[in-house]
Amino acid sequence: MNTTNCYILAIESSCDDTSAAVLYNGKILSNVVANQKIHEAYGGVVPELASRAHQQNIVPVVHQALAKANIDKKQLSAIAFTRGPGLMGSLLVGTSFAKSLAYGLNIPLIEVNHMQAHILAHFIDEEGYDKPSFPFLALTISGGHTQIVKVNSYFDMEVIGETIDDAVGEAFDKSAKVLGLPYPGGPLIDKYAQLGNPKAYPFTKPKVADLNFSFSGLKTAIMYFVQNNVKEDADFVAKNMNDICASIQYTIINIIVDKLKKAVKQTGIKQIAIGGGVSANSGIRTTLKQAENRFGWKTYIPKFEYTTDNAAMIAIVGYFKYLEQDFADENVAAKARYQL
Ligand code: KG4
Ligand code: ZN
Image 1 (cartoon, rainbow, N blue to C red):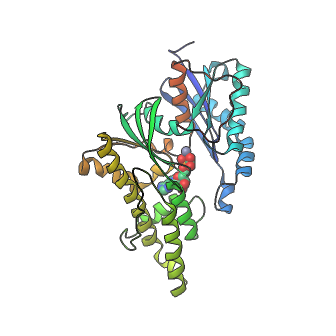
Image 2: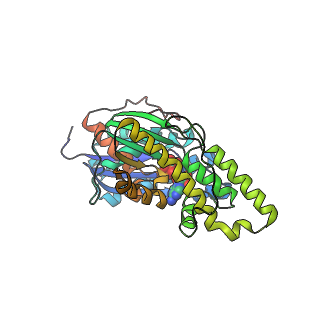
Image 3: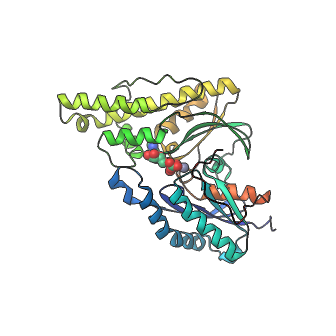
């Protein structure tokens, strides 16, 4: 095993992005992501279409990742892949591809938990980005998950809070759908929110015990709010899009910050690292940066391309596992539900 010159090829296919990355030791050489536009028309990811698109994308995406990294597949030390959690049909494509390639090249295969990868993305060597030290709190917010995790070391993580219904990303996407915006609506809400008044329309925050979250009530509240106002004025949404989006985003951020405050109080840990697609949100980024002065926290926000689904984060976990010689055997299977 060559641990001084380690090249990992990583493959991510858990949802609707096909991605491949090459990592040399802790540094990313390439990180190629193919998005699937096909789901826009359906207002959400259609699992069968996602699986089919992964099958079409995977070979060109891996080729591109190797070409951009300027290496030949024979130089690879190991192949890492997302085993789960995610959509079964999507996971199967990446898993089968990774298994066959590792087998063909006769190199180790490394299985990676997608949620762990969102957290460990903070450990990619990247100029201008500090790495958190242990222990720290990780807030993973994506289209499928909402968790507060106490991270004691690379592989010792404890979920201390999570959503009991919708994920934060779903709250953004479903609210956007009610407003007639295409999928995924999160980035659009963010865009309009930046032009609106966050206090224009107050929405009540859910009362959920402990460090858990709930977002389904908010979605329903927004639905009734829109229905009632549209009855009075058919153009209500179009006229007030910026203020509505700003108010929704403000409420969601408040829910998150309240829980983080509680988590800090409970654990005494003031280092907070965020990950997952929703951490691309400009309001969340600004609020967490401001929390450094307001609450004395140290917050870590990853480089934009490592927040949404990507294979670079799978590669860094693969690298840490490679150093520990934690390899998967050829019978490893995709796992749609895969706890941290
Ligand atoms: O991590 P990710 O790429 O995929 C999952 O594992 O789910 O997260 C996708 C989610 C979607 O719900 C999308 O709307 C949301 O992240 N998202 C955002 C923003 N960018 C992506 N939500 C709010 N503001 C954004 N700027
Ligand atoms: Zn994700």
